[in-house]
Length: 247
Ligand code: 16G
Image (tube, rainbow, N blue to C red; front, side, top):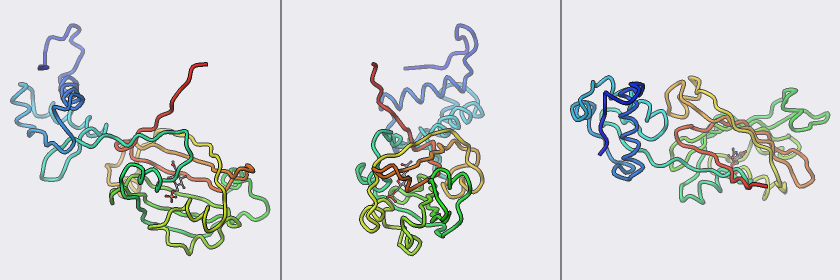
């Protein structure tokens, strides 16, 4: 059983950090399982002989990392493991969630035809017609917000997309089945950002929480760009991975 020591070799490991490690180890060893409630701050403070402030600091870090979550008036609980998303296959949100046994969903915030900015026109290699269908959706898994996604599709590719029901239908499904687009490849980037007030409110996280900004340009087999998407994924829910091979 781990304990908190005030005499670590260098005196450099803060008490909150030691507590954080103890809780993390308990989660890794499955002594604490998803959905389990942690003892109260007071109980933890008493158990380890540290202040409640220190306990709160350790717990807050684990909440930021997505290992724990707080429920107003109910306490602090162990979170489900993060969704691990591979970065090799070109899949849709609907496919990704369904494959995990989660119910995919969306809340359309805005869908309209707009003039592409120079940057987006460049990404989509637009010619004279610079119109794009801009679709902003909150993406849900089992009703819980996961990502905020803004897609841009050249107008010519799906002129009637704005009239489609995009709360329950898959965009990729529509592009492939209704508009006959064969999606073949994509370039995707991932970078860290902090949630602004708007994103935080929609995603149900605190302002300043870590998010993963993902940009994707999707092309047909002929190399024509048909989608530019900018999305922010909750950093406490998502982890992206790539399998590497040594050559
Ligand atoms: C994914 C894609 C997004 C695509 C969407 C279609 C990432 C980072 N992004 O969220 O580019 O537009 O799926 O989802 O994976 P849908 O077919 O379920 O509407």
